[in-house]
Image (cartoon, rainbow, N blue to C red; front, side):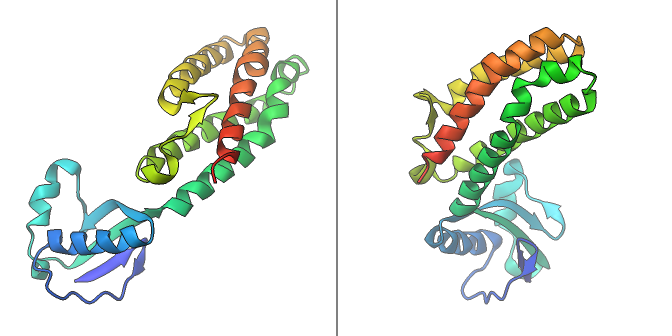
Amino acid sequence: MKIYINGQEADITLDSEKNLGDVLTSFEAECAKNKATTVNIVVDGQEVSVDKFEVFTQKPVESISTLELTTVTESDVLLSFKEIASYFEEIIEDLKLISVYFQNGQDKKALGTVTQLADTVDYFCKATALSTLFPEKFENMNVDGISIQDFFGDFMTILTDFEDAFKNSDSVMLGDLAEYEITPRIESIISMINSIE
């Protein structure tokens, strides 16, 4: 069986492992030592879904040709958060000026800012989901004293309003939401990320 970790073939010698479950248990024990965990498993080209996991773990080692594992580390998640803070910092001033851009015919600049905001929020959602895999490091994260889940609930409502204003070409509403609702929340996210040690 060939084992690939994050796309690279790994030089791993199997000892007493009889089935895939044994292999994964051994691998996860090693991951834990390095503050890492497995986030995706592919056996002979077939992704192992949660509902089929138990069945796959019973597969004998000799019946498997390739095992591809994708891992993420605590430091990967932290690095993602730091990147997100940097991306948000890049667009704060543009967000405050978004209605001005539209009014001055700088639609391309405004659209670019909206796209970057959407992409960075999506990245933040994914990083936050991954952070739950490392509770010792990230479980106490909150934004202005509010849990991440509650913060997201509130923030997503505002982003939906922002999207509606965008679709309706309501530059005044876009400007108000961007400056008075979205920007302060982004600044709070940046502060939260900067407080992670």
